[in-house]
Every structure is written in structure tokens, then in C-alpha cells.
Image (cartoon, rainbow, N blue to C red; front, top):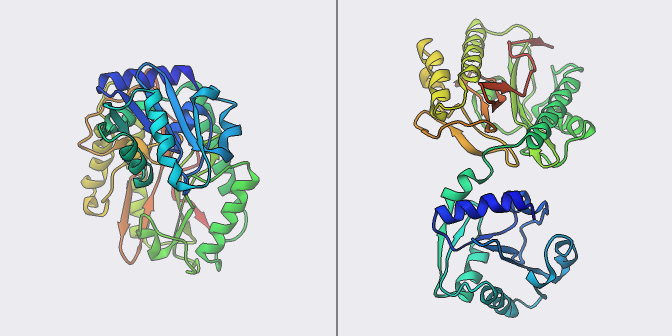
Length: 367
């Protein structure tokens, strides 16, 4: 395991008064171990005590991978008969003396399957949400992590530029999404942080539109929300284009969103509340009379996941610190006409903030 990250986790556990933490496959397990197990019908659980001791419960078929990272005596493996699995959980719990422990879990990821086995094996232990631990466990990125995110940005930006080399008029949203997907892979993206959003015309007024068979026409706004992954780390970018000339009101909202985006990016600095970034961007849109058409938060954290802490909403009092990475993505959405969103990936530095993304943000005309 990454000993520095393990030490950080155990300090957070002690502060929150947990005796142990139970993790199933996901981003926090990968962050600690660099192993990428997937969720399946067989439970896989890593349990760590505050003293750094641990056990890893997993199927025998996965043992060879785990043995490269973990001490063999810490592995508790099982076969294909589910009736025997609870005994393996009991043996693992006994090794760590978890009979009366307070065990924290990652509430947004831990499933009923793993929870049921823990409860059956350790009936006198308390199992609680450890959201206070996991909300800050991965929130500060180091230089290596940020460099990976910069590479994910370059991959994503290059993929879109290649997609736009050909005319978009007459193509469906699905066709453009497919071409963008191919170009992301060609440029080196690993698994995608999320499926690309391509939304044309009135569909661009839906912030989470799904690419459809709608055909791109002159006069449409065309919105791309896409990202890439490099060595596990994500980028998440949105740009909006005008297909030939568009209605003056659509040009107007593009100008307002551009200003809100840049104001939000510049607002970020260490020592201020995360909510201040949202307030700064939102004020621009509200002053121009479009406040009711901006109905989501200004951004979200970014890292191993496309959505993680810190979340950029007005009431968030979390203090920004160097190494925190998040999106700034204000939008205005006019139902029946179209919407504009501009999204950049921002990292807090020692003295301010830096945008990792640099594609032009103005409403460019394409054909």
C-alpha cells in the first residue's frame, strides 16, 4: 500500500473516532493500493485499523494480484460456495479484533452485499458512515496527480479538435458522440470518466442531455461535455459552439456565461470558502437577468472520479487549499431554444488558482 496515504487515512480515522475502515472496490481502494478491482457478485473488502494493520477479504481467483501488494497472512480468500463466505469474514474480523469495533464505511460506495457479510460476521460491532473521512481523504492532489490530470486535459482537448475538423451539419448527436469517443481513444484516453454529452439545438438546454438521433442544423447551439482519463485521473470539460449564425439571444447568453466562467475561475484562491466561487460566477448571471436559467451548482471536485469533493455551491463553507481541483461550469439554459455551458478544470495554487484547460471559451462559429 501507499504508506503516506495509509498514514493520512489512519489520522483521519482517529480524529473521527473510528476503530477501523472497511473499503470495497472503488476509487479510495485504488488510491491506497493502486489495484483496480471491480464490483461483482463476490464481495471484496479491505479492512484497516487505526494502527495501520489490515485484512483483505477477496475471491481466490483474485489472490495472485493481491499477493503482489499485500502480506500473504493478511489475505483471507474464499471459493465459489457463498455459504462459506461469512466464515472467512469472521476469521478476518477476529484477526483484527473487530468484535466490538466502530467500523466506518464509504456510504456512497459500500453496498448492501458487503454490509450484510460484515454485520453477520461482527454482530456486536457498529457500522457507520465515514463520510467525514472520505470527503477529505483524496481532496488535496499532489504534483504527480495534477500532472496526470493535465495530461487527461490535453487528451480530451485534442480529441474534440479532431472531431471538429469535419463538418457537423447534418450529423446526429450520436454520430458526433461516437466520433469523439474514437478520437478520445486514439489520443490515449483510458476508461472514460463519463459518456460524452453532445447536445444540439433545444437539447443543449438540458444540462445532462443524452446524445440522440437529432440532426445538427444551422442556427443550433452545439454543446460538448466530455472528458478523458490518464492513469486513472479525469478531465471534465464543456464547450459550446454556434452552428453557423444563431439567434442574438443565444449570442447574449454565451457572452454572459463566458464572463461568469472567467469570474469564477479567477475567484478561486487558498483561504476562501468553496461557496465563494459559486457566488462570484452566479452574481454575473443574475445581474444580467438570467439567474433563474442557471439552476445547478457552479462546479464539483475532480480527480480519480469525475465528481468528488470539493463541491462548488454557494453555501459550502469548506476552505479551499492548494492542491484542490474542481470545475467551474456556469450555464444558462433557455428551454426550447438552447443552452450554453463553459467548463474549465481549476487547481488551487499557493497564491491563487490555475486553469488546467485552455481551449477557447468564446462562442466560435462552426459548420
